[in-house]
Amino acid sequence: MPKPHAPVALRRQAPQTRSPNKVAKLEQRLAKALAKRDQAREQGSDTLDAFEASVSTLQQKLDSAKAELPAAELAPASEIPAAEPEQADAAAEAIARAITRRAAQGPPDTAEQKLAKLEARLATAKEKLALAEAEGSEHIDAFRQSVSKMEQKLQQAQQLAD
Image (tube, rainbow, N blue to C red; front, side, top):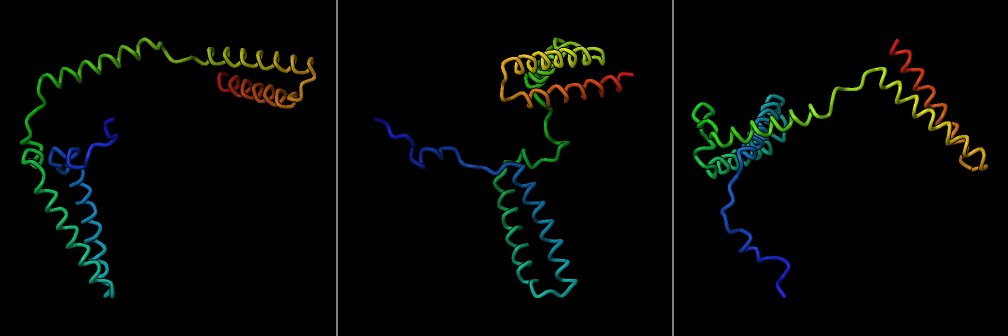
């Protein structure tokens, strides 16, 4: 019977690289740490040494993360090659499918359609209340509340429609 988990050495076949997102997060953290260090320096705080250590640690982490990134990911946006035609076609196809789906859904409900739906829901709620009263159900109060809420919603919708 095979083991449920592969050994760690087998799971780490490809060298792990830092993503550009990780670099961006480290840059944000460094900016915050620099601001706190400068504030502590202005105030003459006794925690200035801790902030200095934090800034240097974050700077080291950022430098190592940037070193691990491939050169193409560090290039400015103007130097990055445009998307290949296959990728652009896939994106265009996805957009076309989304537009088709949205068109198939039909137009959004009008106020008259919403009123008709609320009236139908109210009629159903009244039928359930009548059935519960005929059976002597213990849930009659809940059905009455439901009917009153539906009537309030219908009145509000009628006022908005007018």
